[in-house]
Image 1 (cartoon, rainbow, N blue to C red):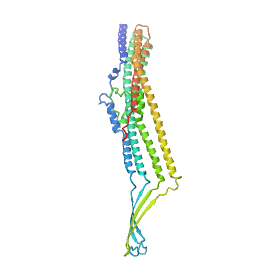
Image 2 (image 1 turned 90 degrees about the horizontal axis):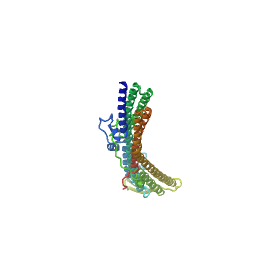
Image 3 (image 1 turned 90 degrees about the vertical axis):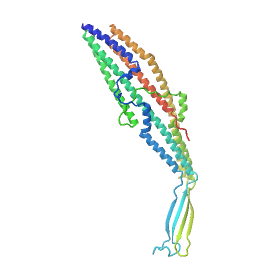
Length: 433
């Protein structure tokens, strides 16, 4: 009677783990596991991106930087404020009487300084280009923030589905332990089989804990990006990211990438700075007018006018150095642009190659590797049921099914990560005015 009971439980276990191994190959199984966030309203990736672009403090600070530069572009193009002078001229010290003698008077004067010709216009143009560079930087950092959010989002989804997969495997291993115990009690199995089954089940708890910690970290990062006080509940469906362009299209679009456009604008601003520095060879002109009120009886009032010029007569120590420094800054900006362009080109090529490789790996895993692992497990299970294989072989092939299921999830995650990175690299900035 005990032997019959053991065989009956063994057959139920064989059927259960065979069904479980088949489910491990189906992505839909991953969405059927209870989630601690299922009761809350789930946040979609599209909504999260909108929240990030609207609420992120870093983007808000950069927006104010753009406003600052645009205001400065107007201010620096204006003439300096005129100077008003009030004074007392030739006042006698014995009694300070203004009508005691001629030339004692009160004066009022007005002066205006005119910078060297064309300097104000160039400085306003330079500040305007710097404001445009900041606007492109904002677009680039917005795209970077979206990429960072997508990375954390996909990592969290992977961890969620991986936990579901491992939990299902844990249930199958529990069935294995119970079956091994039943066979051992009916004298059809060994204690070693029971211990192997228990070890295979218990080791999965470490994997679950690790995945849960990674998921908590990913959700915390999402909360930080969205400026939320606690981690949100996210949708458990994998997002539909835009399909990546071809490599040729990606390389062609790099010139419009906002961060690269910002570096290009900074180069233009530095080149304008060279023209501003050259204006230092020309003198600044100050025009002044003074009016004096004479209080001595019969004396006329007085009017004075004059022109004051700066004298750049030692250009080697000042103007030449300013121009040389401005040229060095322009070259530095140009080298920085060239370096960034090369870096983005290399990144696009590397990411596209990785995307193509991951796409092939995922297709091969779905078409060949995972079905083969499942068939190998079924064959090993049948051999064990017929007494031609050990339980260790069943556990090993069962774990291989789990490994390929997790590998498939990793390929799916990394494929979407590569698509998100290519989408960032091909982001286009606004048209220059």
